[in-house]
Image (cartoon, rainbow over all chains, first blue to last red; front, side, top):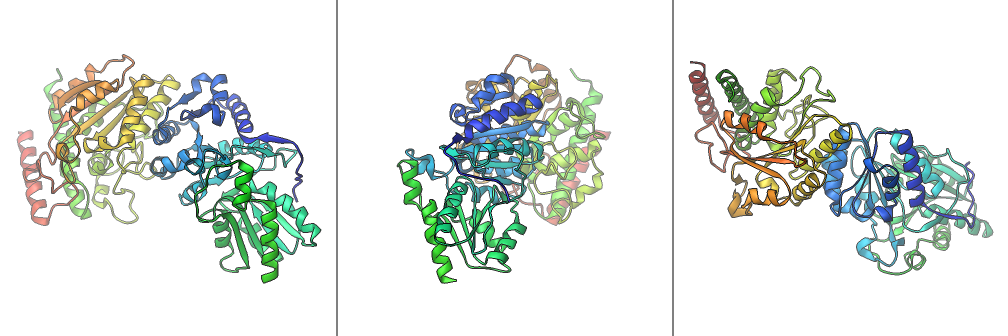
Length: 317
Length: 280
């Protein structure tokens, strides 16, 4: 079991990204960073300030940025390409498919502002299909870290991995869940709370909600196992199957459409020996403007909704 | 002026490329002969004279790179690579066959000498920009060549890349536009106009040179005109789709269609006739 607690301390994952990038850049001269006119928002600009020679703003031309990233990678660079998730995956999908995933080039797409918690910008900017898009591509690793500590571990881990990676993080500050570094490994899921009545598997921003749900369920005498699944592809199928076998019920939670994301990946993993399952996510609709917390509440991405759905599942099965 | 011997040698290579285009596409039963034949002379000049490369060391870090952005001309690229010694020419007979490394469009993971996987139009120039940027970063003197189709530049991403190339002053990037004037649905100017093409590239900050893309001497001479002046260069090579096979020249129908058996025999005998004349 991994030590994880929800405290009042919050930190933005974008800040963690930029500090980890700078540390990586100091160690490795092959690290090159690209952005598409959002360097102040994604915080890659900080890398650019420290290493002006290895930072290129490609302007508002995301597909081209992905192709340029591929060309740099083909010449031995470890390329980090950042912009908002909606542009990084939707706008650039074919460039990623043709020039990065198919030739299996060493490009790390780190997308910020993923999910509905983008808030006021509304549906046009709330990317809810990025995991599905990237998961469908052969050779692509897909990661959604839960807090800033983990994000700082993700950056060197993906740099170490020779091949394409997609990392999605949100816009908002997130509670710190992990006090110490060194946990993250590509392809591994983590049991944060032991339990035998039901398993809640969460990724990204939803892991904090799952931990809160654990305490709420405990009060109702429901013993939930909480799994944090930072890597959605390749999925830690062994851990998922073990949880299915031992707890008999699974709920997945993601700030993403229920189509093609973590929920579908988990369902595939237990398809041979299925157990009753509920997928919590955005139910095949576009988002809207609002405060982040209001949207998370309205679209059921809260600890309270996890509790409600867990009770439903236990009642039915 | 290049010496006659060199020009004759490259003409011979171009002819061999053309013969292998016909042979491999005929055997494959599918493929794109028209655009492969139009670019054959350019590829011959690059691989047999202009480019710094080593078939014994395909990943040589200091090599000049070539991105065939119009990836459907793969049969011509494969023929050039095989003739240069990257793999045995006999392999060309297995183009597009299941389990074989010669994919319908270039795959860098499978084919030695292919610097970038291409096929979906509009992507290659961006990748070439990245390679040229890496060259500048590493202070290396290699050049990056990108071969574009003319219809291909209807893709918006090409212009994103064109803009980035001049913004980052990539004078180590040389694009060659195979201006054969035909795309699948018809003449480029009818389907989606490209002219004034040279002016458009100039407006994006490129040096533009226009040449006859079938005149070996002119192609070779062009490379001497390219300056290290902090500007990328594009060579607009006026070509004929299907060049070298009389009944394919300037026709739409052989964009993506293999020759029939009868057409195959006719095409090969035409090319062999030219070869005999060249050898006399």
